[in-house]
Image (cartoon, rainbow, N blue to C red; front, side):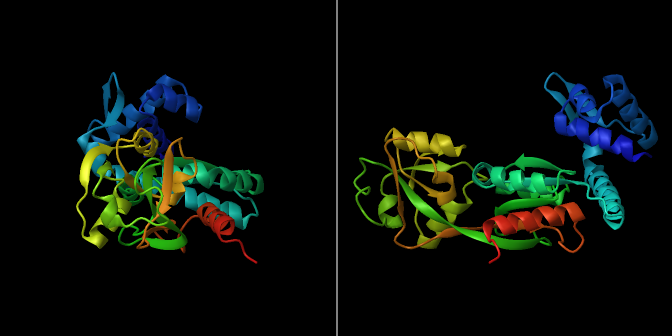
Length: 291
């Protein structure tokens, strides 16, 4: 079985399209189709389900996806190590990150990293805590900029504490306070993050043993802020999400401090590819520069 075929299959799943996968890999669409058909014949079962929405994996393919990704990761690490021994810097790093981190930190990190390591390619994947955890476990990404805890069996390097803030309309009775008591905040209609992105809100509420009056459940930080700006409720959000506030929204620290712990998760730094280690070092230097 060929590594090239595995790459073609995984790229097709990533793009959800044979045509887009062919364009990105430099093949023709019939060429990609032929490689996948060849794999299906070698394995003895269908690999892809084709529909108007694109291609998705069959149940049989889902059972072996993690092993295919491990094979590709190992092959990449082997080539990177060979290149490193020969004094050549190459590689591909698949990085997962929260939307807020992608927006606030990654542009500058990527700018400097790409300037210093032009032969290392970066692939960026945005997701919430649940998605990043899943992608780490099945090998879809090499490392993740996420909040603690990392999945079991993964290493986590703490980079920054990100305080959770009260988010209020500027006309709200609590907006004039220097600090907001969580117990006072939950007396008002509450806008709750959607499941999967609600860990930080739940941490505060569980810590204070509080039950808010949930008026809306919203997926999307910008939508939550827009709802608050229209005086539809209050919320709790980490400070990193609040660098660009819409009009009529104010933030206040909590009387009892709570924070999410942001950091880098990787299965093993010792056994990570040279390119992944270089990227992790770049992130650490950006957030915690050496004196």
